[in-house]
Image 1 (tube, rainbow, N blue to C red):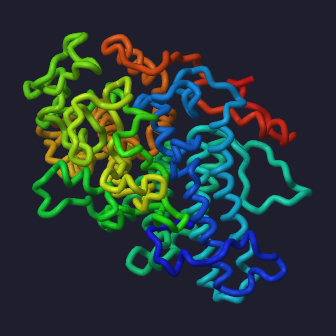
Image 2: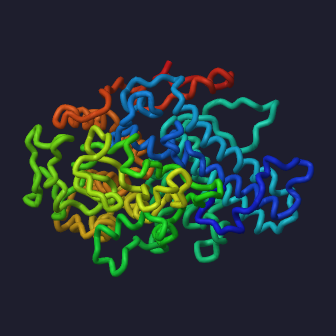
Length: 520
């Protein structure tokens, strides 16, 4: 069962869906079982796992639907039609992501609607409800970030009320934010939260993300300020190895470090609870890949882009970097996060150096989240998936302050600089300068989000909320033109590519639902 870095005892419970309603909702153990089912929904391979070899649409497949990646096996893979600009309302990935989030919401609603039947104190009931409300908010944040207007359900559906209309994205955000604001204080704070359970600070991080994604800058700032200072950015050893400070964060040994705010717990092998996002067949993953556009976006160690830095040792001449003859010098003197995120020519995998990598058209495999030291269990891995970590909070708080306006630059950039400093990258003031405009600061934080948070399931939402999808297509077209890389041609069809459609199967079975105008 999925949970948040949970203890063994918290996992060993039955699924409440297998218990008769007549005998259920009697004890606190029943509530814990129902709550565990909520956490279990996070473990779906169409949500925060990703069985790439099994036809799923998890976080890695969603990221590789953007300008961060590509689908090496071709256009039949889930998400590829979104990337290509050829998607239709019947495409399977729209349906399975919709279902995964509504499954989470359904389970949370079941607990919220029934917990009053259990003989608990008012404080206990409020705390359990608040926890489920926060998890439900995460599901709605996911949904409205891509589908925009969706049905809002705050109680279990009945046969008499089996259909629901769409609600406007802004209205859903308003309701969810109000729910979180009212209920988050009822969740135990980090120091008092039960092992494996969502903390008050994690709930505020969810609130901050919902507010940020919906341009509610004040609420985002208020929420994130309740998280700042409660966590730390991970550093390896004494912190002097900048590459290890980043790369080692995404390992099993550090999955419960103080940077992790909210994670999905996987236990393997042999327990039926392992992850499958690390499938790689004992060599670098070749079903999905990163793009050269993402690779080139990692600056040199002086904080300058590769086309401006004197430290860049590679070639910027067209044709100088190919799959058969990679330009290995281009990976020298780069932001340490580059090799913690991507598996590149010249890097080693379990002691073997790959000067040319298996399969990727772009020459870039994905390194983050993969565990070459444990490939014997790659279909049943035990590495947790981190939904929210402290670096995201710092960058999101900076972005919220930039968009609201009126803050001194130093107050904004101290959070960006903290993220950069962890990997030895210079401060904003030392590179980009002082007295920067809002537009300049916006570009800086957006760049920082991309290189820090790549393959952490945020790129789709970022591109849509920034209205940057068309530009992302142009960036990939540049890859194709300059490098000759790319699995398929990408096009931009206009407004319909800026929002996902309501799955056609939902339209067909719900008479109250109508399709977005862009997709009619």
